[in-house]
Length: 605
DNA sequence: GAAGACCTAC
Figure 1: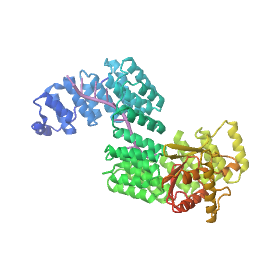
Figure 2 (figure 1 turned 45 degrees about the horizontal axis):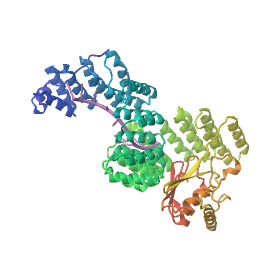
Figure 3 (figure 1 turned 30 degrees about the vertical axis):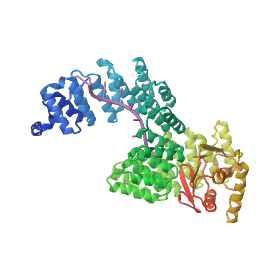
Figure 4 (figure 1 turned 90 degrees about the vertical axis):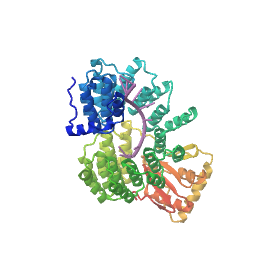
């Protein structure tokens, strides 16, 4: 089964020259080992290999393992594998090193295959091998194999190994089994910063940010350990996913206190968090503080700018990174296309889509084409968008995103025919079915086709399709206020809210604002019927602005499936002028910053 | 004796 490998080809002249150099210290075996441990240069490694071969010490498993690890460290997996195959008696360390090498090189399947071959060669895995194999399952999101290895870990009596348990928590988390991860975490006898971080990150990565923050609180109160870079970036990430600006700022303080602000990953999570929480200026400031920013912080900043409709800034950042010789990734291009889409820069977007392969060898995938559909749709070129959507083979989540994008775009421009096609695609693919029905129904409603609205509603009932009630929420101090469509105002200040609302409406009317006849108008796409289309959600506004004394930059979050209409956009602009207060509304993951009567995020208005 | 865990942009 094992192949005969080759020692790397070396120039004999080079070798004779190198052999005279003192840095080899080959007089002593310990020096040789030290040289192997410190070696970060392939040429030196090859020379050491040659020397070991000549001296006959390659047959010593211990020495060979050091050389093996040296090749793995230098990411020369083929040479490591050749060496492994040449070894007369590879032991568990040799096996583990090569398995780990395959994972590092992005070949987790080969790693698992090799792990599976160990029993045939009568080498039982130890705790190091198990944690390496479990990591391969994490990378592959292979829960089944992960569980099998977990069972073997238990049988081998290794359940109390700290590193193994952290690896298991991570594996369950990466396989989307958050509760499985928590079970392992809870069963651990002792924990360290890494195990706490793994569990916190698991919550954050699985859209359970509240639990991530709760666990961080427990960590802070139960241990004397200080959070490290990894933990802080996980916390900031959780704040970002929740849109919790206040918590994000608190995490930022912890970052500064612990002097972790120079860490690029931490800085990137902060850029992302502020971008998602409505503070573009903070994002930008942190971005500029990153020395020698790599592709990820650039991409994060490009996305933040794109969200605000600052397409020009996003494209300037993109040009800047190219000038600095930083190679863009597929995600960077997604950000660029997103920016073009949200700023109406269609020609620019098409140009970048064309060049991403030609200039950087990145093939556009369904996400890029979905951006293109969005871009064309928003620019009113809905027929082109439709043609693009039809030409793409996209399944599962990617397909849902594509057709959902086309559906929203066709609703925006009132093209019922295309909305019907996109909606049907979604419904038939069993993805986002309820959302598709509701958006489709609203498209009919906006076109005045109430018969179709009723038909669709009947079809939903027949199919047992139920749309979860959407809600909005406002964070204020330690409380989150949640509102559902049509809520009766429940808070103590209810009457004051209504009074403020009336006053606001009065003053808006005095300034010539004409709403939809029902006060501050929102189109709530959750509701299907004619009467409910013009739902009144002004309670949220009033509470946000008037009574709970929000800070100057308040954030109202409106969940994905509630979309602002043009009227309420105008209303927001007017309110910002009347109240002389800036505020940010988050709508379908886009931010609109209203200030002094205008909105800095143009978006599709 | 050599080898293992946690964080960032969609």
